[in-house]
Length: 244
Image 1 (cartoon, one colour):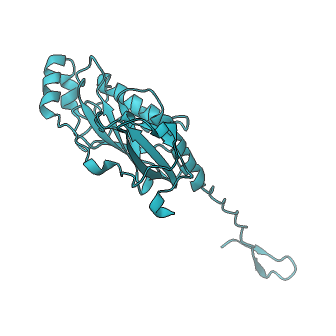
Image 2 (cartoon, one colour):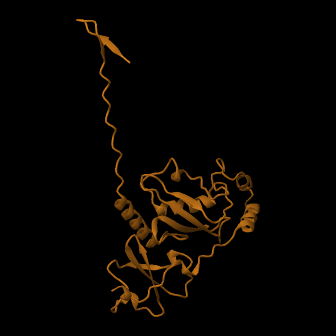
Image 3 (spheres, one colour):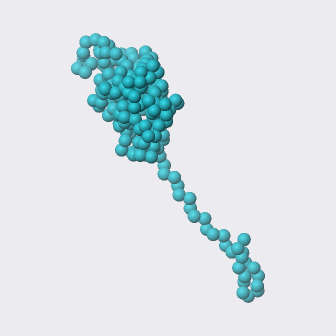
């Protein structure tokens, strides 16, 4: 312990301890702003015209999404479709989501556990990115891998032989089948002669996303394999008749 002498009576005097610096208070995360951001990204994705990508949050947890991407035309992945999971942190979009392949994918930048080596999901992440740009980037990565930094060395070594690579993809690929209850059917359609609901043979469905009731309508002749196959309108004020 540091001491100093009193010059009058030579009595040692204990030095005062240094003052503690105040600990900065960590920045409070506004969960509502994260929620609004994810809701906005969902709507932007659903009305976008991008082909071969889709995503939708879990009905009970908007921080957990399931997505799909289709292999681009004229690549060895053409005709394939892969399921992804996206888990968003509480400080999104300042930190990237954790994105993994749920469907096995034979690819230089995807390991056996579905982890993806993509710079925008790591050190190159920016708050300007969103779900749509993430899915597009992963879709592009399928046909344009980074073989110099592989997670799957076997896939990286085989990439230069596209014919053999195509055979391997076909051999290992397992098509995804979404369960029939992926979307919840609405009990009754909204009241009134809303022209958006007057098309013949239209099936109506509803999901609640972050407290917003989202009504869907689609033609049953079209396969309901992905959210992108739906047309959307948002009706936050509508309730089912049995809830009134």
